[in-house]
Amino acid sequence: MAESRRTGRWRTGQRNKQRIVEVAREHFTHGYEQATVRGIAADAGVDVAMVYYFFGNKEGLFTAAVIDIPEHPLHQLPTLLDDGPDGIGARLVRRFIERWDKGDTFEPLLTVWRSAADHPLARKLLYDTLAGPVAERVAAEFAVDNAVLRVELVTVHLMGLAFARYQLRIEPIASVGVDELVAWIGPTVQRYLTGPTPA
Image (cartoon, rainbow, N blue to C red):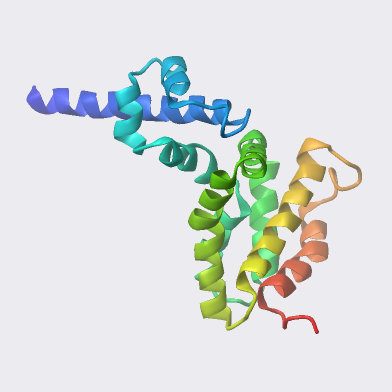
C-alpha cells in the first residue's frame, strides 16, 4: 500500500511537472520578460514552490520549456555526430525534415527565437545549453576552426527552411520531396560543419 502511494505521488508529480512546462511554453511565446513564475504557476494550477522545486528558477524553467526541445536542429546534431562526419549534412537535413513532416508543431521553435531576440539572458541560455556544447564537439571531432559560427550557420539555414516550409508554406519549398531537399541542402550543411574555412 505504501509503495502504491509513493508511485501515485510520483505520477502526480510528473503530470504536474509536464503541465508546468506546457503552460510555461505558452507564456514564453510572449517573450521571456513578460512571463512570470507566479503567473505560470497560477495557470498550471500549482503552487509557486512546486515550480521552484522542479526547475530551480525562471532560467531553469525557460530551459526546460523552450530550449530543451527536440525540434531544435542542434538537438538532432549531437546524436548524428556519434556516427562521424561522413554525410552528416544530409543526415541532419533528413532527420530535421522528416521530424517536421510528421506534423510536429512549429510553435516551440518560434518561441526560442522570439525569446532569444528579446532578452540577453535567453540568448545566453540558448548558447550555454545548445550552441556552445555542440560547437565544442564539432571543433574536437572534425578538427575545424570557427566551430561556433559553423553550428550557428547550420541553425540559421535549417530554421529558415522550417519557417518557409511549415510556417509560411512557400511553394515549391512547402511541397518538394524530402529526398530533393536533402540533395539540395545536405551538401551545404556538410560544408558548414566540415569544410575548410573560406579564404
